[in-house]
Length: 158
Image (cartoon, rainbow, N blue to C red):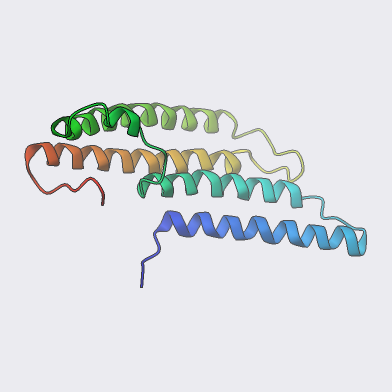
């Protein structure tokens, strides 16, 4: 049995909540003419969470589009050095985005959401969690690249 990673689980839970809320709201609107006022906002917040945490899961599994065209331009002997360079650049960029998402979320923490009136931090925390996980995974990939170049076990496709 394949183990379920925490990022997969969180993304799935939020996606199930999104779908459930939308279905219930459609049912309430068409059969009882009484839509749930907060359903759209709840569905949107949950969908945002599923996107950012799901994106982290995709990054961990190397499911994002790569820079294949660039890697094919170099000889195979250079591949591990190119992967190291790419992992350094990605780690730096994601680190900056993570920092900016924390700054943005802290700045918006007192802004209430339009319908529920809860702190926007609950919505924006998805940025922190998603980019935080991607940063952790990118640093892990960077360490594997360094180990591969150093000749130690560090399979890049794990």
